[in-house]
Image (spheres, one colour):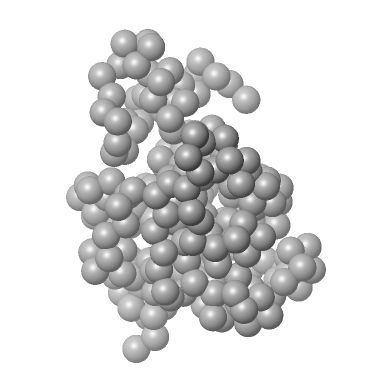
Length: 226
């Protein structure tokens, strides 16, 4: 049984998806090939969100905030070291910033990266996750499909992911079916720390960690339109 077969049994994909991206164009834009498991994953699921929380970047996604071939991956790569050096005591990175390629985001602004080593062997790339470009970092020695299988089956616990991630069931919601409120989390490039500080200033009762409630995300979006 392949990892994708295991994933689709665990989390059924949509009955139909839009046509696969132009991989040659995307790879030319990025200047690198992409893992075959990721291409199969995109062809099977299309754009959308796992468990209402985790969005994988894809070439030509409906939003530029989730476009693998858009500005976000390079923008985040440039910001990694800026955020680190701005700290009073810079934390160690699991990989050099130039080897990190952003490929996903969560509703709490946890970013998923490929560790692109060896650069010319994308099928050997592994996964790194962090919280809003800050420490801590979590590393996973496997493909993104293997990562999804292990996270969604609760075999792997990512420390910065909410403990109730799977409480609502293991689901995939296509991008076109997601509500505006849910879509907010994947399109925002603002740190959740900023949203939390804004919410507390407005009198919302919000814990330091965990999933930001939809009503608070809605209120923040209304108060800070793009």
